Length: 164
Image (cartoon, rainbow, N blue to C red; front, side):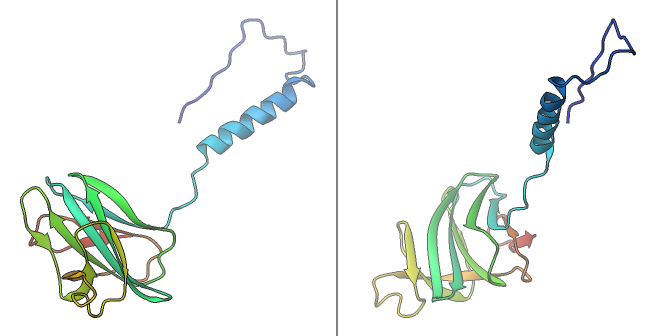
């Protein structure tokens, strides 16, 4: 935040500080400055931060009004974050499967869902192989019904952590 200082070398206290022309301009300037400094509305998103030194590919599973959905791939650079879902979170549980492109390895769990090698959005988690998809184990992430959540992805073998 910056401070604006005004000074005048020839102040005349008998002269009013505001003239009809200056008052609207000052009001407009104060309003514009106030809006620029006003905190923006809180965002409610599901974000994932790659805390590793590797490039990582991430997929996401979740349940919406029509049923189960899996989506992928988000490519995250080392020590970078990405928004996976925008807006207020509608569920308590989300599921993550990720691959370490640099060193090999993966982050996987017990919740089996459909994926594929290229970008995808897949409805349903049943019969993945019969429908021509791959099947991978996803890690369950409990957001505690928060409206926004950030998942921290650390080295393979380490648990996922998260926070609102």
